[in-house]
Amino acid sequence: MRIPLRRLMEILRFFLLFVTCTLISYGIITLLTAKLWSGNPYKEPNGNAVKVVKLINSPAPQDLDGYMARLQLFYLTGE
Image (cartoon, rainbow, N blue to C red; front, side):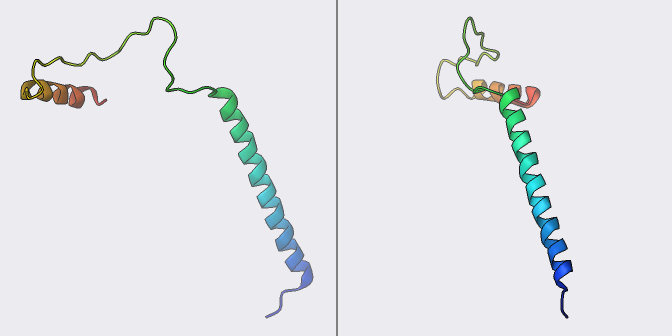
């Protein structure tokens, strides 16, 4: 089965158009992402930062009640 040259050129043109549009879309999304979410979200905060969750202080590292309380807090808050 032979593919005519005209049909082959249409397929090639469609493929090139598809790749070009994909690259342009990727570039636009990358620029928007860099513009909207600039900066490192994990950097140390400036000013008077307050810790959200206070860990339970247990007197001994072998205290299982403290670990169970922390585990229960984890299951309740989901974080």
